[in-house]
Image (cartoon, rainbow, N blue to C red; front, side, top):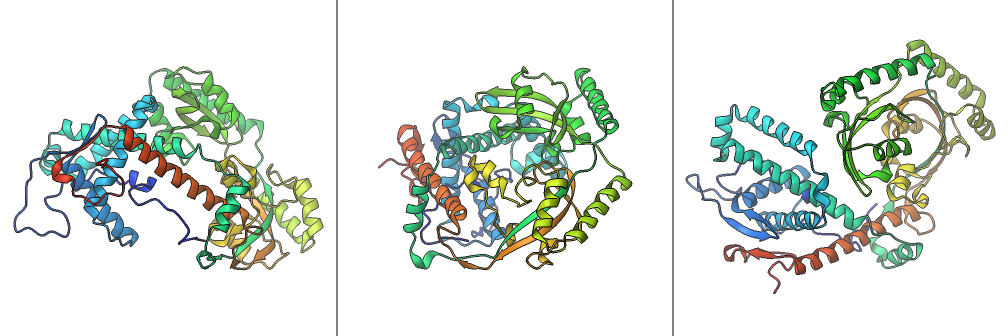
Length: 479
C-alpha cells in the first residue's frame, strides 16, 4: 500500500538507504556515461569539508559508480545527475557522522568495527589477487586503503546512529494519524491488499533437565575457553545458534538496550567492558555475553546463544498430538479456542483464543496499538502463508514444523483461518495501523529534514569553488 502523491518523502540523498551505499569500490578511471579515449589519472583533491572531515574527489567518483550500480540493480530512474546525488550523499553522511561525534555517540565504535574493516580488506586483497595488485588498483599503499575503509565504516555507522537518534524521538497521536489521512487526496489512496486473520496452536519441543544440563555444560566450556584467552567472536561464529549475530562474531549493536529481554539487560548492566557474564537463561535459550560498551541506553556487546536439540521421536510426538487435535476440532471455533487454552505453549496467543497479532510492529514502535491481527498476504511469513493459503475460512491446517520468528526456536503448529479481508480502499477505521505507520514515517522524514537544515546552518561546511555548481537539494552553500 502506498500513498504516493501525499507523501513528503525524503530525497534519495536524505534517506537512510543512501547512508548504506558502499564506498569501497576502486577509484574509477572514468565515470560511466563518459568514454574518454584513454584512462584519465587525476590527482586527488579536497572537494568539501564538513566539520572536521573532508570529502575527496575520489570519494565522489567511487560513490557515483556505486549509485549507478544501485540504480541499475533496483531498476530506478532519476532525472538528477548521479554525480550530483553522490556528492550530496557524502555531504549528508559527513554531516550526520560529525554531529554524532559532537554528541559523543562515537564512544561505542570499537573492536567490532576493526574486525569488520579487516574482513573487508582481506576480501578486497583476495579479489585483487595480492596486496600489490590491490595497491596498484587503488593507487594507494595498503595502510592508506585500510585507513580509508575504517573512515568510511565509521562514518556509515555514526550516520546511522545519528539518524536513528533523531527519528526515534518522533511520536504520533491518533490526532496526528487522522490529520495525515485527511490530508491525502482521494485519488492518492491505493487499494489495501488482501489480508488474513488467523489463529494458532503452538507446541514447543520438551526441554528436559538433561538437555538443559548439556547446553549449560557446553556454555561453561566456551566461557572458560574465553577466560583462558580464546576469542569469543571465533567461538560465536562456530557455535552460536543465533542466526543474526553469529555471522558477525556474536556482535549486537550499538543499539537501544530496551530492545533486549530483561535477563540480558540485567547481565550487561552488571558487567565491565571486556568481561564475560555467567550463563543467562531467556525465552530464546541460554547465553553468555561479553560487554563492549554501555552508555545510557546505547549498548554494544557480543554473545553466544545455545538451545537444546531434540530427537526425531520427540518431534513426532508433538506432531501426532497436533494432528489429533486438528481432526477433533474440525471447523468448530469454540473447540479450537478450548484447545488453545489447554495445549498451546505460545504466551502471546494462548490467552486470546490463539489469534495471532503482528507483535513485531508493536515492539518496533513500543506501542501496542500497532499490534494488528490483520496480515497482508505479502507480509505473511511463507512458513505460515503456505498452510493458510490452502484453507477456507473456519478450516484448520495439518500440523507443520516452523521457526518462531521471535526466538528463532523450532516450534510445531496448526493454524485456523478465521477471516480473509478482500482488497479494498483504505479507511481510517479499518486500516488504522497501516495508516499510522505511514504517518509516523512521514513525520520522521519531516523532522529529519528540519534537523538537517538546522545542522547545516550551525556546522562548518566548505565546498571548493570547483564543485559549487553541483545540483544540491539542501543549502550547503548557505546562500
